[in-house]
Amino acid sequence: MSINSYPDPALLRATVAEHGVPVLLLSCETIRSQYRSLHEALPGVELHYALKPLPHPDVVAALADEGASFDLATNGEVDVVRAAGIAPERCIHTHPIKRDGDISHALAYGCTTFVVDNPYELDKFLPYRDQAEILVRISFRSSDAVVDLSYKFGIAPDQALDLITKARDMGIKVRGLCFHVGSQSAMSYKHVEAIGFCRQLFNLAALEGIELDTLDIGGGFPVPYTEPVMPIDDFCRPIVAALERDFSGTRILAEPGRFISAPSMTLVSSVMGKSERGGTMWYYLDDGLYGSYSGKLYDHCNYQIIPLKLLEGEEPDERRPSVIAGPTCDSIDVIYEGQMLPELECGDLLVSPMMGAYTWATATEFNFFPKTKIVRVD
Ligand SMILES: *Cc1c(COP(=O)(O)O)cnc(C)c1O
Image (cartoon, rainbow, N blue to C red; front, side):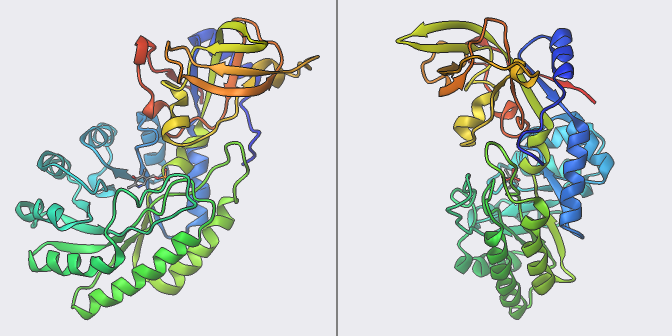
């Protein structure tokens, strides 16, 4: 996927004419093609789409139709897949920290695989030990992922065996291990290292008489925002080799979120107002850091932002360093400073591709600017 792939400008204009701005254009065809490329890059791996980056019912329906499985973390996510008619056997519940009501809600739906990373959490499964099965989440710290998801969760590798044997002694079935090396990983060697560690843990568990049969390699598969990333086949090749070496015959799952949803949405916003301040042009858009660009804060992500008229071929005479700000009255709500932009007019449209993951999902309604509407375009 190129970092410069935009929807057809005519489609963008037509959608804005019909639905107004700001608007997020959702392509379920892109969801399907992302799923297929990852499926081809990771043959034999069950792909559980993590709903968290974009928990949209149309995304879930398109993926269900492709044969995907699902990764749930909250009662709200359980309700989305249940409403879509997904069989609960195709779902796993991966939040390492749960209330009793979270466990019972997922079990009532029929989802029986849960993730645990500490002994306190294990205690919560005593009442459910006849129905629930466990994956133990291991922490492998990753300094080069953009979002290190082993900081907050996961048991240290050298404590994992104690947790597994404790579960066995409590009569709780442990099926296997899982990890998440971090989101938007630049390279896959962390996955490969983690797979090697997990092999050792499988062996140690076997010495204790515990046969593990499932390995979940998490998410982290990268997409291009403002910089190119490794093509997904190249990214996955070392992972596939490590799995063949260490885990042939084991059930393998993955939990992709960003890779599947990020390229599926394009944001179109408009200039609400402009001002020349201290010689710099300021453009105030109708979407910002409290809205669809929330991922700039929470997801540490930079998105491209391009005036639609440039995509339509207009050649500007002059570009000036400009500030692009969001609509709220808070000064933190500045998206970019020092952007080289041609002069924009009120009402001009701006386009950001790759806005499907951790954008709308983390947007707020601060200052009563509502969350941007999602419109499906195919
Ligand atoms: C967020 C999350 C994912 C998705 O990660 P991506 O990097 O977006 O693919 C998968 N599994 C768990 C447990 C998560 O918290």
